[in-house]
Length: 337
Image (tube, rainbow, N blue to C red; front, side, top):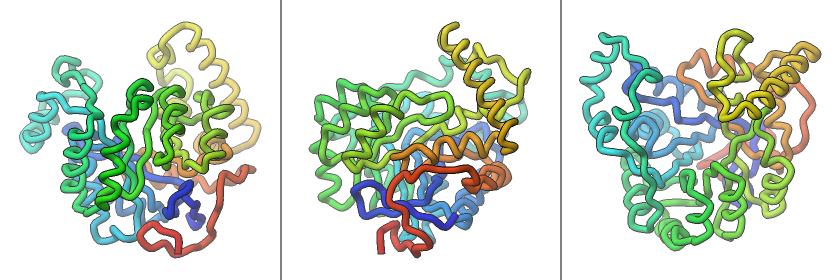
């Protein structure tokens, strides 16, 4: 993975693919050291963009990413998120992980069978004091003095529009604790609201063969403003890689109308895979990386083998130019030379 892209209007230079940290860590995983190897493998494979959040695995994702990347900190771009507040149950679970992990293995408890009451309800806080405390805690877990990118984590559109968070993020930027900031968005309304703030350097949105709502309006507007776009859920949470009969599509849909749409999209996707002779991974990732305006596409993996399987994708299909591309540039500190 030799090509690098300029990250919007910043001085950062990033790899075409980034590693998402949502699957890194957690009490349902056996060996934390395997995640350190995963992150190191990603870096050795040419990935220099690592996306995490303070809530992922109750902070363990940041801890493990920080441990793996500490020796190469000046050669990578670390992006994290803040805005969610962990409930007491999850904070307790974070402290008791050494005890809970063997107990979970013994009892064969599965994540999807865990009652919602046991997880606790998530709340959000985008107030300046909370964001400042959250960044300080993330820096400690990541073992770094600064974040290359801080993102508001799924704020409602009305929170974005009020802009009470802007002063806090500008202050963190002036203090050198955050180099750039952006917004990870769950709705087009929140993303469009974020584009009204000049300090926003990036948007993170879902982009995949199913999710195309941002292609016609949002991403072109971000591109016109030279705002970087981080694409997540590139494989539709793995749905595009599943075979017929391996899953219940209704469980992935909120309505019968959505289910009918997904059935048509899945049929079209499988036809394209069969017609082109490419793998499902190739077709899915070519679709995302071919969207003009997408700067970096996040890959999710739990093991080194999963990551290697994804990285066999080398963009063999035709692509559009998605932004300024820098070929074979040695990157120091994730910055342009």
